[in-house]
Image (cartoon, rainbow, N blue to C red; front, side):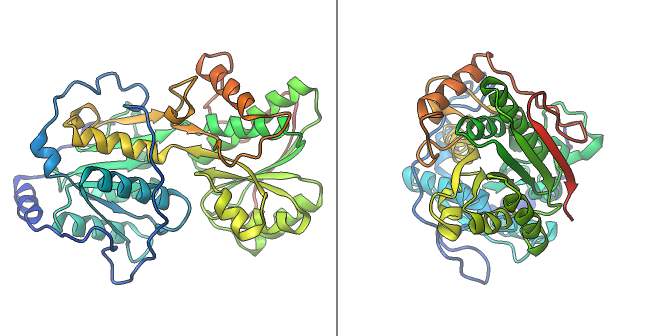
Length: 414
């Protein structure tokens, strides 16, 4: 992506005057409605820097910048109790603020549009917040509208890719706006882990229900197929995979009906990958004591809490909290220049310490079995880090392929 020209001097002057007006409220959302506060943040753990960031120790700490640091998060179309991107990001930001004495608040847009997200970014800057954290690809439009206007604000974007920002016109050189850092994730890796784990656990009739066929969802799905296929080959098992997209990121009666057909036809576990679409898989699974695999964050509490204990066998996760901790710590320590203007593709960084990795399965809630234990998972991760197991990130094919498993590709349900 070509470097963007920063805002005109008038805009910069405007920002300087806005930043002088601070807000002391670090708990309530900056909207007219009052949001329910999320559960207490879990302690975030992370590597000192994201993967492939060799220069992260270059700059000395800028104590003035650290003392002036004010962090705001803007939610996407969900809220901070969504047990997904928003809640994980909120908890990480809140924990960082409390641990470091840094002012933190969050803003909830009134609706799901670029204009409403931009309005909350404008408000955050007007309230004096100079670090803005944005979870999810939906922020691409807002970044394009605000990054140049506020050159002195540090933007941390989670899961906003170069494709999201520029589409097919991107030159894919891992660069973004000069004051933006964006983390994207190697979804094919946790997808592979989930598919491999499911077959090793003894499930042979699988399903993949994606939201929309966007690159991140496709990588999850193709990784899932690769993992299931590899385990099927190792075990000599007959594995079948139903594969479809809902063509939306939420469940409804039509998608639930399709999932009823899967589960009642013998599907044992479905990897539900895409926002709230898991509700349709879980509703259908509950009728036949079926199982579900969560996505992006550990969804066991959400799915099991709503649809039945033990339904979620694992989740294919992205390390949102680890990323937030790493970037906010870098800003605190005056190392922002090691990240600014970059898009980093985060994945596995340790064969030994699972907490350092930016993708993975949840060790605490995965339903380990005699045939796939926590130690087996760690051995798989080590093989992936060391190159013994390779996973393709190619999402260009119209549908997934396998050598051992049988795939029933159904395209879009709606």
